[in-house]
Image (tube, rainbow over all chains, first blue to last red; front, side, top):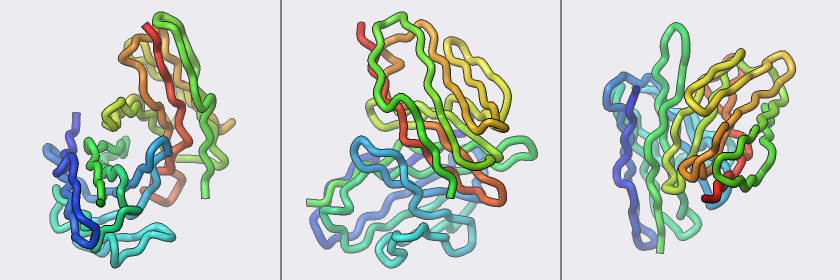
Length: 117
Length: 109
């Protein structure tokens, strides 16, 4: 099946620093990638939809200047948390859609756990 | 937007027992997926099932799109089935998936 990787898997940073998370589709081209955030014991909340070569579409309430998303190629999307604060600590998960004529199954990365001190 | 509710929110089973998880959604959908999130956070795709019934080993799923619900059946549960089960739906005219509230399953040895 299709594989999506994320790097890093875990990151701890100081308040005020920026953190970049990479999401890669390893064996397929993903025209659309999604970024989710999950707080402990809660469901996944969509943050933004990323299409290759165009600006990301952010969900209501998500600050686009704080969560910078770049989808430079059909296999790579990055999420940069700028000037991170403790309230940004969360589990960030990306997914990629392999669009076909029959299905558009979403394949998820393993997630990145961010802890901001 | 589409609302997705799952039930039960929590479930504890003895190993070997069967269970049924339910996903209700508030509007018509084009796609529906079931996922298992293991204790390490990894999301595993179980089924892509916008309608009909599918089976994969001890798991099976049924979606009745006209009545806006989907069911996930787990038979002969094992401790490795523990985790959180999510359904996610996609409405028409969008690539966005909306996740349900999840069912937290614990299987006891």
